[in-house]
Length: 121
Image (cartoon, rainbow, N blue to C red; front, top):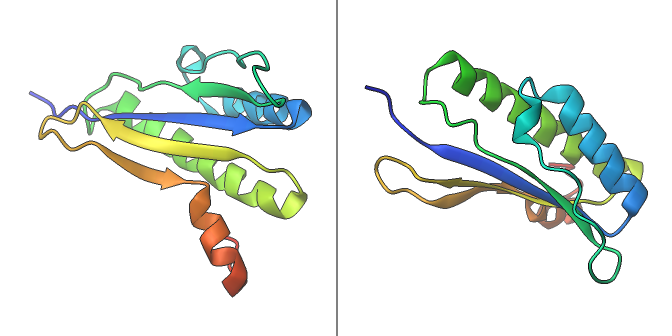
């Protein structure tokens, strides 16, 4: 038996061009394209979002390891965009854990806290 732990992300931007760039990059990075939603149409104030869904694989399995790597690469890309005048709000969450651990794993506000100390991440 394997251990279940779902990880997902939501990415949002007020800039339509930026969110389309981020979505394109996610599709380029992720090996399972069906995990990525379309960009949600603008609702209010120009904000658009998309989601990256859990892979459904158990920890330690090849799909899980690959999805973890894909997610880390995408988060690294998102973090690098702050220096390129592209701004995204994003969150990585964990839920459905076999030991009932639900949490925010990483988020865009982490970078903003450290910007005053001159650290990008």
